[in-house]
Amino acid sequence: MSTSAGWDSPRTSLYTDHYELTMLQAALHSGAAHRKSVFEAFARRLPDGRRYGIVAGTGRLLEGIAEFRFGGAEIDFLRRTRVVNEETLAYLAAFSFSGDIWGYAEGEAYFPNSPILIVESTFAEACVLETYILSVLNHDSAIASAASRMITAAGGRPCVEMGSRRTHEESAAAAARAAIIAGFDSTSNLEAGLRFGLKTVGTAAHSFTLLHDTEREAFEAQIAAFGPETTLLVDTYDVEAAVRTAVELAGDRLGAVRLDSGDLVAQAQWVRRLLDELGNDRTRIIVTSDLDEFAIAALQSAPVDSYGVGTSLVTGSGAPTASMVYKLVSRTDDAGQFIPVAKAAKNKTSKGGRKYALRKLNERGTATQEMVGIGHRPEDDGNDRQLLQQFIKNGELLPGWTGADGVQRARQRHADTMKELPAVVNRLQRGDPAIPTIYEED
Image (cartoon, rainbow, N blue to C red; front, side, top):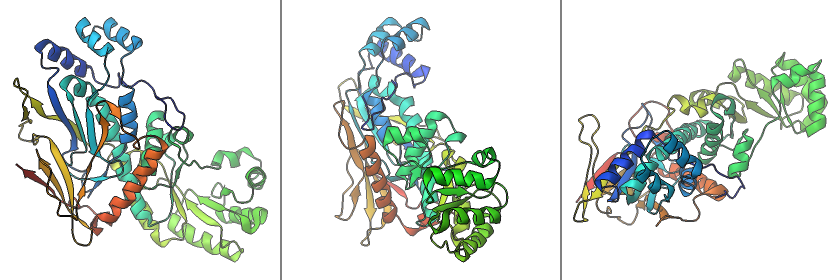
């Protein structure tokens, strides 16, 4: 399978844990592997102090499930290392997901115990997908949740994702995608641009200036290559001297200057005054340098036009995982009837039964509750919104959720869901989830 951007995705079947396949072998032996089952991915809690989370990774995940096959190389590896027996290898060699998958649309807000993804299939099919599902959703949702807070703090000023050098190369592309979904304007990562159809940006680092004998020569070379509308990095040596040189060379068409060190609030203020005095009132100021949502909020009073965010974004700004789990919540008995099942440990209780989710809205269209029906759909009073969408039906991927179109659809979903949430989500202070999750049982 290829994405609409033309990138060929890798085989995903061994992005899993050893015990997924040993469970499969034991279930095949007992005869329970083919019982119809319902698994659910959810987060028991939000990261400490967070008021909401954002679902991301769904489009990547769905493409990966469509490619989830055990080819010759994978089967040879499992046989050679004796992970499972020949009966299990025969099952895996013929594996292709044939069930249904439902979930929250990518870009949607979620809260504790929201049924973010629901897999309906045999136990065997759902079991082998567990680790892959969690690795994608946990990573991408953590990044999107952090990115969403940064976008809120930015107050409408554009943000650029530029964290590739601070994470694993594959994580970097996924993080860029998640950031765009949560409202970032663009990314520095070219692989993400190819795979997901994202806008990529970038100009020069300090090494480019240091390469040349003088800062003036470096600026002249960059302007000659890209025109006066380029962005010049002005803090390699002396910021004031650099700004004056940049304006002298590029004139009032200078696109932007970038600040990457020092007291960014004070520096942006006097750089803005200097640019205006020199006749460059349209030259933008871009700031970088280990920004997170709190630093961005502190820069609200400064005349900054956009932010470049790296390390904090790709590490989830202190919450590198969404802490989602994947649990069996219902399965058929020997008579073929579905029965709810759930773990009963005191500190990790779960609710059994197939879930249905509804976001309750008041007369102003503001979310008030996450209503989760167990075994039935909660009643819609006419002003509410059903949250679960079907992504895969009888093993077939439904259109609209993947590729570049899927990213833009998720980006719009994020924008819409943020307008719907109560104003408390705009606060960066620690607090409870923005709305409560209420279970409605039969």
